[in-house]
Length: 424
Image (cartoon, rainbow, N blue to C red; front, side):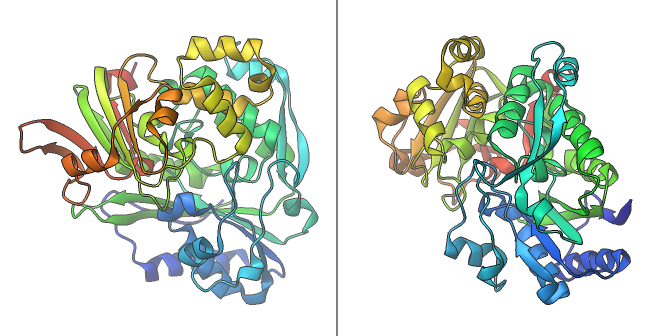
């Protein structure tokens, strides 16, 4: 059921309207005694979920007893990051999700169903795992807060992904990521109906009906002035709010091109992007528009590691970003990859499939480290001087020497594709 629905391509919701929209939905839902909020972490800062979490705390007061950032595989948020994202929300309310230990299994999606949705590519069961707090906390209401935007693993981010992946466990995250990678990113990104989404929907319909989850979903896009605008807010307890948000997100966050782009420069904000685990969104979101033999340059001043998880970082360094057939072969032959399918999936996602070049300009990783995982390296100071993020505008830029580039200031906020590739 929908409790609030407002959005359009040209709408700009103010903070006051965002708060009133949330409050109106919570009023319709009625009084409760114990509430859990599940927002994303700092890597989704622009979702406005921090703001919405603060509004929920102001509304519920001491009835909002716990806040569990949906870390998935990410590292816990630092004290200053909590302040930056959530303002004056008390720190004692925050809990850390451990994707290896803090788990409760609600049920198993059968292998036959995985085989069906993967078109015969995989045949394993999938565990519907959530943080045990969701079940053992005995909440009257669980607010799952986040942003709907094109996503490389599931097609469109958020909705029940925030629950089953954001507060999920090792096996569930590994297997869902691998399913998406094996099925193919180009067949998934920008679509609300995908194999991974179908698996999560199966889990929602069959295992989580006893959890009082309300989804609070934003759609955020850039205005003509280059600033981020809240284009929509959708609140509900089922798929309807997600589908409405997805429909708007495709209009707001998806840019389609008749012809491929030869050269793309992406900037990664150092406060958000410290690893290629996150920074490779620059690859995922642009791969469908990059020309064969095209070039992707990634300016990443905060880049200090490959995987935020130590085991995943080690596997990325060991195997590197190679093409899909190679990763599938390596996964079949090596137990360390076989037992960490998220890492295997990530290596597939980060490959150009030998079709275009990827040059990283890192702030804190060496030339040897970058080239060791099969990316090209360029000095960040030289490249920032040539492609200055402070002066470039999102979209096509003509450089002083006549070179044409396409600039993206934050890859997490969009999807770029050649029309013929997306519609294939």
